[in-house]
Image (cartoon, rainbow over all chains, first blue to last red; front, side, top):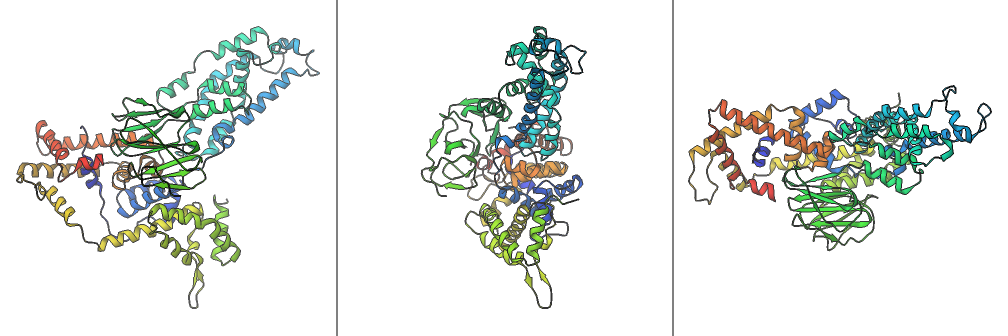
Length: 363
Length: 236
């Protein structure tokens, strides 16, 4: 052990204060504003400093966190990470129409499309369009990264993030063109071979900023995700799932012993770490859908929940058993006190509890 | 500029002014919110009476010769009305618990255990005689630990207290600190290492202990099942 014993630390941290509130104690309005993240920076700092040394206010903010309703499941098309696709796709479609439909100022049409991209026209060349993403994909990735953090509830500035992303459509549109040119998704006659080659070449090298973000452990928006999304129709479930899964960070579930952690990955994959996250061991769960939440009340006990009423329980820290759940509702969170007692929450806000390890559930 | 929760503020104002239709709407919309929060505070239903008792104050009581005064007058729209109601309920609940605790005698066992931990004596029933060296080391570690925790930035101390004292989950701790749970986990580990380093340094520099003695201090701390009961804390 290379740390301070937990019990000793807990005793040291135990703040003993008067039973009632003091003049500096946080009032309900401040506590509520803290919970809704509407305190100003200085107010927030002052409140944190006070709560760190006041047993009553510490209990208040803790109880607020414990009573917070589960995060609402946002429809996928309303998610900030996906919302930007609407203007992006509209702009891409508009550009494609503009390129394909002959206009009075442009020559006869599709067969002369390669000539339509020569610099004498005010429109940028494909080469220029294809090179633009290299500069601005970083902005795309960063914006989506910010957006992901906001969606995770850490930074509540979806409007700002969406605004940044909303400013990017021309970039994504150019990327879509480049990808279309590369994979041949666009009408083959609409682009000259040279243009397509330049687009391919421009799209090929990896983006250094995205790689740096990945190395830093942040959630990044890989360029391939943008390409896939842009190339696929907006309503495509496949593209949607790819996009959503690519952006979902693994959920980490900690046990009371900090060295024992679980994490949820795509496709029902669960990994366990017995060394505080230094190494991870994959554990078969028997399910193939993405699980949504988990709770580990002891180092060898973990409850996991997922869509369609999936409840999994491990009582030995290695193997998983599927627990029969009375409904097929999507489960969004779980709270557990031990291997027998747990409460799961459905996406529509209902709670089901068990005190016999999942053999029976009470709404 | 319009406050961010203008609709909530309007509803609260109308309720406070005694508008029956607004009150009906308020009750229909926010009773489930209060009950859910009450159930989360006390699974046994003990907080529901607090939630029910709030309604009289929220509706407002007309006192002799005075205006009607509703608790909703104190809502200024800095948060959503649902969050504010939750905060009021939580405040009542915490104050009630703390008041009750003030009048409850401390359990004998805990007193004895804490006393044993402070003096370095073995817990009651144990066969080991008190060890003066251990008592001294325990005192030194406690003192150094108190200093190390006291020197932490308030945010780090808050994170530790929320996680270890209030025993919130990583996700809940993250909700308090507005951090992702992975960040909370990382920051907790970093803070524990900082504390450990500070304690070791103080034991060496100020108490004049050798490396072996410092190691012995922590071994005693971790291995003492009676006074510190570390295994129980970690593994149960």
